[in-house]
Length: 317
Ligand SMILES: Nc1ncnc2c1ncn2[C@@H]1O[C@H](COP(=O)(O)OP(=O)(O)OP(=O)(O)O)[C@@H](O)[C@H]1O
View 1 (cartoon, rainbow, N blue to C red):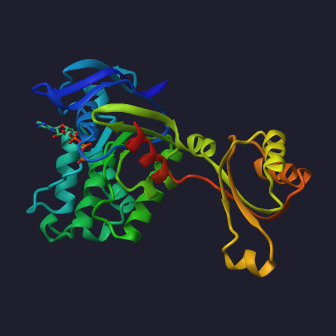
View 2 (cartoon, protein in one colour; view 1 turned 120 degrees about the horizontal axis):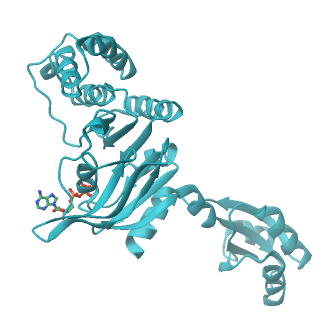
View 3 (cartoon, protein in one colour; view 1 turned 135 degrees about the horizontal axis):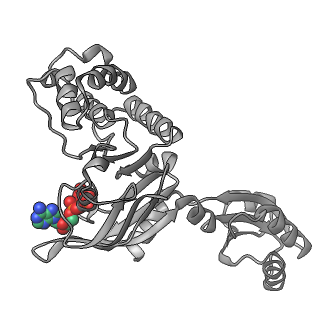
């Protein structure tokens, strides 16, 4: 079953902006990343999914229930992007307030508060006021609030924007632990290198429309490239190698002028191939090049980063 399933979900503001016709499936237990340029409609989508705003059209099911179901709200944690908490409350007071909003009993609240404080590394700060916290600490206490109900699904809108590198690493580890415990994590972030390390499935929104959803690693593997530096290339030999290997040659460049090539007195060619996902591409390619009569000097496999894929999608779509 899906943790989140939307069909044609649309929210516009007076007919403009927002997001349109979003049909998205987030499997239970996934650590799911939502990406998109500024103003793409990410926050609008998340706000609909946590029932802060109503869709103009379309529908969604959260943990199997329609949007707005009160019982489901108790199972969903949310850390908004522009969090702002009551300066005068202590961390412990803030957690009590959010526990009450989630409908936890005072006993549940008292049991859960130290647990979530420990999860976000804020045990020492429970009795200090939120106003005395740094921005990063406020983000941590916000994350603690979102974790209070022991959520089955948690929405985190830019959860590490105020954190230092160590804090980011801690949050990444926490997210992985939550995922391992079966929690579905829906992460909205501009930090692609961060999403890359924690997320498997992603969705990309551009101009309010969903332009991709799926496993980004599958996409990256399909977009893998192999760069080979060879000597003895000729059009006939290259054609034979391409036909034997079955990979398209996407670029070819002479390295004559480069020092190594000159010193060795050889005409080196740089060849770049795109290769299929999951195939033992490098050995196959090397064999094809050698059998076609070329000497292979260097082979490197390059898997596209999430950032490259994202830019490709956003600039190309
Ligand atoms: N309350 C609102 N009233 C009018 N237009 C809005 C409102 N909220 C968002 N929009 C518009 O809807 C579009 C999507 O905005 P949204 O905040 O969802 O994007 P986003 O992807 O979260 O952006 P960012 O990455 O900058 O936070 C933008 O064009 C924005 O101007």
